[in-house]
Image (cartoon, rainbow, N blue to C red; front, side, top):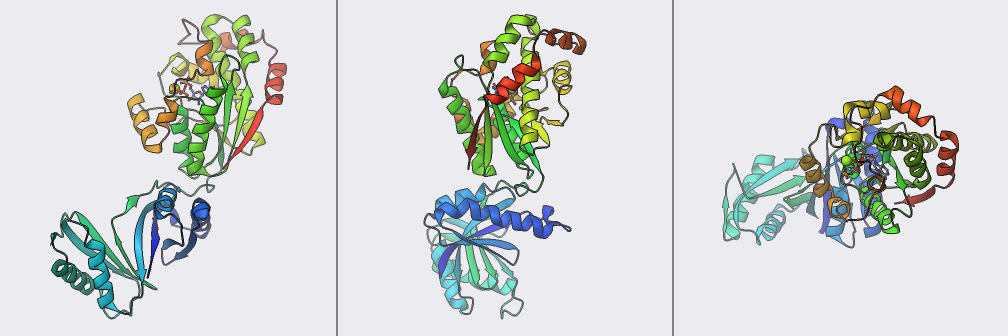
Length: 382
Ligand code: ATP
Ligand code: MG
């Protein structure tokens, strides 16, 4: 008898020909996630099992963050031959609990002498008679004891929800423009959840923004990599470009032109890294550079799709997600972001593409971009 983790995965994405490929990826990611806590991982009978860990709570936390995992339970694995022993163990598991309960049973071993209703009835009766303070409620119980009869018997009470989504690496790769704000980490998470690998680009305006500001962004990237695994972060020196724009372009267009350079440079790193799309944390109308016209102006400078998963979300909804993912606290730290340094007083909210293009002619784009790419620091995470 030993304690293991029982991992359930969403069935929806497992339909069709991709099933073995998706499942293999999922098992690999559970292995990666538990490697440091010493887990042994295997797949059997529609479940993933994890055993031999040195810290069960940490193992559970890590597994619940793997994309594709639906829920995780701590379970007792025991010999299925002695049903009385199973009933005794069920009572032990339920003993610390108060309130109402029911037993659910699943039997994938069809030769087992008891069928599911009999397992539920007998184990339920045993718990009821041996654990004071518990009553049966089959409709709305406080606790559900699950008994599964497979190669062994597995007993579990309760579960924690996983992040769901699709296994990482089953849907290509995209490049996240990661700032130190609340939005972009959430945007990255939402795309990664669909099985998309990430790389990140961050624009750093030293000395207008501090080392601390950069560290904050790397901390955000680290939180994302707890879900996504390995991730490369490109930290691009952006001061020169901002100064040039500030000096040579009309004040009301500086933010927008800066955004266009961010997109152009991100596309270069995306292609280098094998990514097929860009991701930003933009949402319609949130600031002047996120009006319909402004978004159109940034779109036109790149030759790959730009995903904006937050496009229709309110700030309060984004914050709720950031809290759930675990990025909110870090995003709320006060260090200055590069965008706020050169912010114009009256940014254009209805910019015209031809006017923006004309304004950019004053800049030596090729040289500016080449220098920024040349000076980029590459950091490997995960
Ligand atoms: P918030 O709106 O929460 O302050 P934000 O990151 O969304 O943070 P915005 O100024 O709204 O900040 O920027 C819009 C998008 O542009 C961001 O979501 C991000 O994808 C990208 N971006 C902004 N600044 C940077 C930066 N310094 N490095 C990389 N990407 C950036
Ligand atoms: Mg924003």
